[in-house]
Length: 125
Image (cartoon, rainbow, N blue to C red; front, side, top):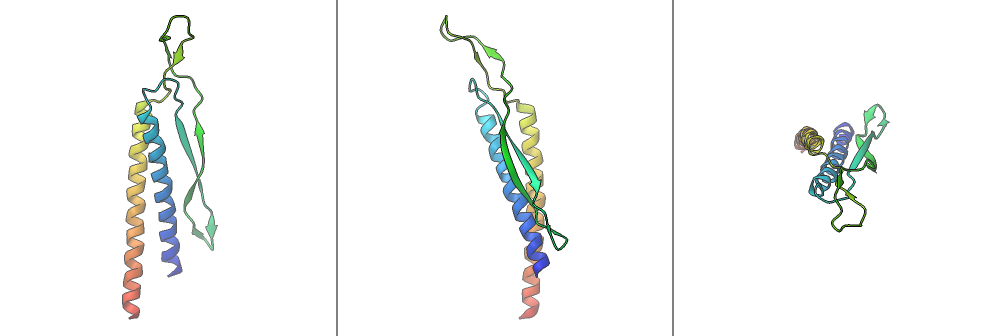
């Protein structure tokens, strides 16, 4: 039961990390037309091993992309020009697709672990 529980824990940690990655990317896309907005990203790391069993993944940090966006004309003459958002739609969309696929794969692993635990508990009764 510990192995299945650990596998489910690893899958659950990956579910959380990928959901967070999609949320950060969705915020970037939502602000794509906001002048001066700087996109954010997510860094994940391996959560380590206990007894040779992986503990999953975790969000290590979020970071801000400090590259400036394209300059936009000042709304009022005499004011300095602003910068557009530095969010790029294509990388955000492909990142969301990758995170979605990873989420679905880990959900399948979690469900398989749940099914194995249920079978084990049914055999014990």
